[in-house]
Image (cartoon, rainbow, N blue to C red; front, side, top):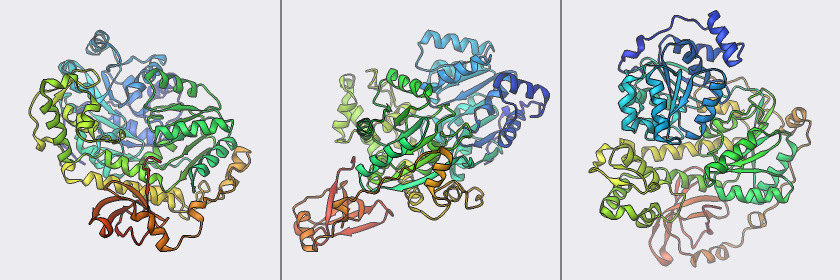
Length: 596
């Protein structure tokens, strides 16, 4: 992981983590009496002026690793954080502790941004929070040499890596921006990272012989469980029963907004109140939902993965996944938001095989091909001056994008903006093409399809974790993240101990396993083969369709070979990613709604 050395590595602090002054500041400013072992090691590395890469589970105290040095060191700690919505809360919390901190982002007007930058240049701040997109601001780049940045902190650092579960193009350019700052010692922090992701983070940030500290989900108070469900109704019944059995606030995650709304209605019909949080709400609505949840003792919030990052609520008693997440990294990060107070917390995934179709769609829609990026650019350039009256829907229509969850257009626009090919946006009605685009400027992985395949393998790993009913969940996680395996049985997962026994002993609650409902369509005797094939002969399939074969295999049609009675389907299985050739005349093939 050794990169080019930078001038910042000589800025060191002689203080040790057991120094009386450090212990005093830790207690008086942060209310912390004792550092955890990994925190202490990371803090010492930061104080010593080393580059540090830290993987700690959510709630393990990562932010202290850069906040405490900001108080102890002379100079500014510049913090790169992904979400504007979280910065005000972070800064308010620090200011309440008497720490000079502020943020600069697009949520405040230009005059206020300038005043805050002036404070930073005068050396009046301990911490300054920015998004990675801020580095594209000409004014911010202009003032960078005037900032006395003694440490750079990159939060949610997995966003740097093309192999991370939330890759963002602007994050991938932070290594270059770090060079503009004089290569200050840098600490990169994330809740989840495989060794491959950690290596990629170090490479992109140009870290010098970094101190790498990695921890798994070792909190014994979290119980991990997976439940197979047969139908959407079965899933709703089990989620409702689980919520009723658990005492305290919790989060229920789902992949689709419409499924959240449907679940919200079904829970209300059963007398269970819930909040709903997703990207379709206004900023004020999302803020109100989050504030209500943070201040409650029993509220349940139904959310997409837009909710949770930076949610500092210690008493979350359960995290349920109504639909399978895209990766084990995302699942681990989300369940880690529960039980941060050390009390028992329940983490359960309700596994419905058809949900894999949703996530496979998301994976493909998050990976535009090189040809797709070029087509977006050529469309924008072809519009010429007419671009000022166009919007995102016009671009989608021009590219024949029928599915609004198809994110390839937005991702491509982000790359063109990051590369300086375009500026402005459709939202502000000022988008324009400012220079020619050379496809060679894009990262190599966009042209090779390597990231798409890696993302699909990540989904496969998530599926294999869900389907393994015999291996300790913590052992499975340790193997995935290539960490030392814990001693099994762990006593806190459904493979090691009866789930309801653990639940009732910790929550003094009744078991929450309603009788499994039979699904007549899936459990009835299979009709004669010739009868089963008859409907399929009348159905015309096309590339991209999600299908169920013989009531068992779920997959996506990659290709239709031949026509009429000779038609054959090349189907990629959602279960094992294998490709199979299917004859609709001889096998039962049922088209599914991929948003089901």
